[in-house]
Image 1 (cartoon, rainbow, N blue to C red):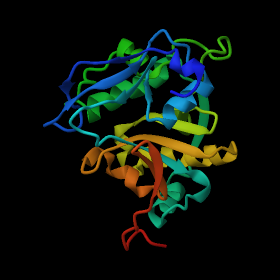
Image 2: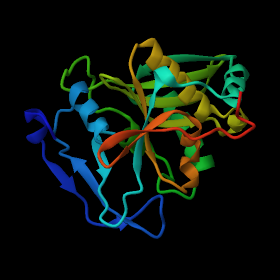
Image 3: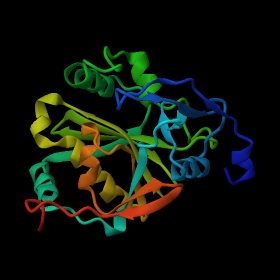
Image 4: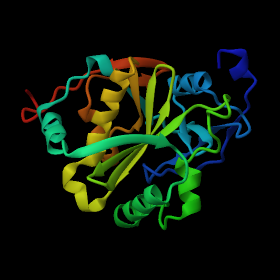
Length: 254
């Protein structure tokens, strides 16, 4: 890493373990020292070289035999929604959005538990628990009280007074990074995951920032296909952010 603050931070590499996304591959993960104080400036630089957050841990894939996990970000000033995305915005016009810090909350956890139990019974996230929720999505301290920490938020969507979706996001100096989204499985027809990304794009624009970081994209991985629907985008390949534009299908064209 470039600065003195970064070069003094220790990194740890895990032993090989089965990949969560590619069943025939073994993965290794590079972790930042858990004791490191990660402020907004450092976290931005970590995102710029492909790191992500899970709870209080910061990591990136570091696999010997595979480099298919590619970081993706959207330059929001250039984003133009597709016809289907505009329809989706209209479809969900009755929802309201609010933000709160990423601290444990019974209402948010109840929705998360329902989502995991319905959508991810075959994953290592099942069965959900309050401790797992804290470890995965919550922040260990309040950045208002500890300026060594960056800010993280729950973007909460409600239908009337009922919580129906939560997008977890982190603050960077140049944008936001989308951590995870969960929603009421009974409202799957509303495509609330995609809708949440569209709202986060709007929020980055409103904050006069540049990017929405979407995490990793893996070519051929079904779970990642949705990220291709947001164009143009930049992908981190060979340590450089490179612009990618994939033509929309005929049904998506305006």
